[in-house]
Image 1: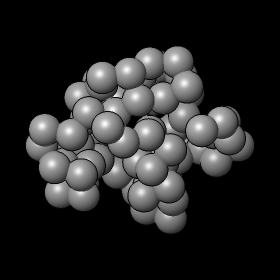
Image 2: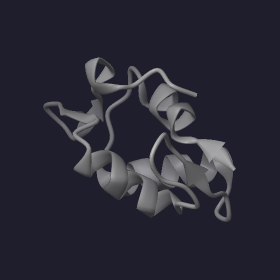
Image 3: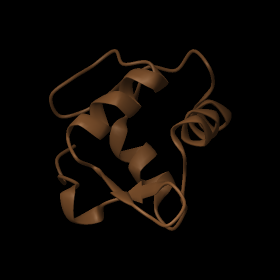
Length: 76
């Protein structure tokens, strides 16, 4: 199981659409990988994207979005 922070770190400096982020997560961590955060666990890649979006962790960009580093907690 992978912590969601690893996905947020992967996103830094890159812009994504939801589809391209899903593809990048699967390419990096594999299609069967599950993720956990400070307040959720056993999330699929799509579940993690939905969770992070609901929590306001993404920052809009001209094309797509990236991680909003000011909204990332630093708990492990």
